[in-house]
Amino acid sequence: MIPSFSQCRPISNYADIKDCLANPPEWVNRVLPLKKRSSFVIRNNPEDCHCQEDSFNPGSRIDSRTVPKTLVCHDYKGGYQADSYIPFEGQEDKTLVTDGYPFYNWSQIDYFIYFSHHFITIPPLAWVNAGHRNGVKVLGTIITENNEGIKICDEEIFSSSTEMREFVYQLTEIQRTFGFDGWLLNFENKVKNPGLLISFVDILTRKTHEQDSENVVIWYDSVTKNGELKWQNQLNSENRCFFDCCDAIFLNYTWTEATLIKSVEAAGARRFDVFVGIDVFGRGMFGGGMFNTYKATKLARKHDLSIAIFAPGWTHETLEKNLQSTAFHRFLNRDDAFWASLWPYLYTHPINDFFETDFHIGLDYNFYNMYIQKPQISRILYPENLKTIPKYQQIESLNYCACLSRSFFETKNVCLISTDNFEDAPEGMFAHRIFVCDIKLSGKIGLYIVTKRLTNNDNTRVKIILRTSLNSGALRLVKLLDEPNASPTNNVTLLEVNPLKDHEIQYNVTLNNIAKRYMKWLNNPRYTGSVLLSMYEFSTTSCDLLDVAATIENGTSIYLLDIGLIQLN
Image (cartoon, rainbow, N blue to C red; front, side, top):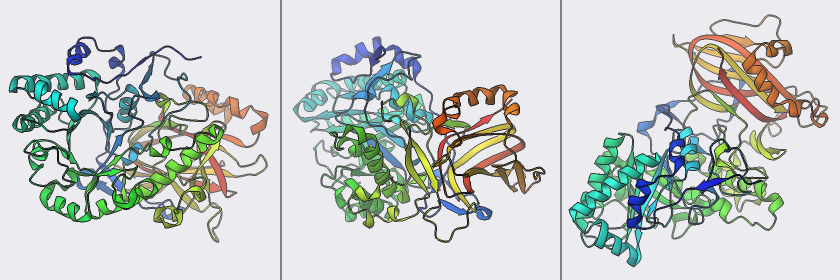
């Protein structure tokens, strides 16, 4: 049954702004605050998915201010599709629609722009909250186009300095009311008064920063300093005036390596504020886009420039829908292949808070719901069926290890951890890095993990390994054992933790309530002996959790269904 819902809508006409601000929808009170991110990132390395257990060390951390950024510009079927539906409060877990495009690789990006061809694009609540839960800034879009755009610019918003300043005020109020984090400015028509346009960018950026110093205004490479619609495909003297007034420039898509080099020279110390436009549909793009999008990404990163990935929903929008029963599988296969091809040129933001996840991406076999999306593994999972991807042999990052790959259980996606493709690998000796973290641990900590063996008859188990850094600076390994050890080690180098027994779980209210969630599987005769729940409790002095890994014991493959790290009282 479809629950009652409201819907997020854009502002299509200048005259509608005042009414929108005077009568905002009730859901603006449900916008989540932007979560603070860790100050560092990890440079992605396709070969860093596993290592010998004894060599499990934290990856090198880099100050996030010293690397190029990644922006995703959502452009899925013109916007405001199923993602615009807003369930009434308390019904966020109910099914609204059966299909839609989810983005879930939040750890790999810095900004998310919701894009449409309406005058003022207000990001839907589902996207704002999904981005904010992951520390990603979500931006709206201001766009004017064609003859209608000329009329809006010349007769309304830039008809005078007074009208321009009023428009600035209205935009800052819209952003404050709807709780998102800035604007993409996309004027794709001639402007009669370019001086007012330049002042508009300057004043809007100042007012946006006054509202919150972390807010962002980005200029799209379109109109020049003289008010002409003339895409430059680079940063130069024609658009420099706009770049100087705001936080970044989003370059048009028909650039060449020569114009990238010129942009680097023009930007100087601000080269990370130059976002190279990359159209996944491949319209006029270097490399042709689609599954060749990595070629443009690689070239932009060669010159240490940021990237703006436009319309990554291509993986879903162009999916053959006739075979609906396999659509979920085929979408994730395409999406994993696409993002895995880009992964070597991106940076991973660590998880920096306690978490519980079943890896739901906002889409499964039965429904689409971004409100129940959960944290993902800190790398792109290897595609389930690589042979369906055109020319996959030519994509370097798809020819690396498949030890962490996409798989499925019941109606949802899961992670398959496997050493089947390892040559001459001893069982139980490899740590598979599943989360990169920056989490402060102190006191009593709980961790649980739900796994599924490939068959009911095998004896495969999983050991979880935490690499921590004590406040003293010493590195400590915490091993959550798959089987009890009568004399577990507890020193600076190593802490071994035994799994809790059933009666110990029952006496812990928090863990017992969590365990009840999984009775539907644990008590199901179909999964007897194959679905396993392991729970742990340990105490620690103050330390930083840097990485989480899984080691397979007594087998070669196992499904990771759920995992949670929680603070216990």
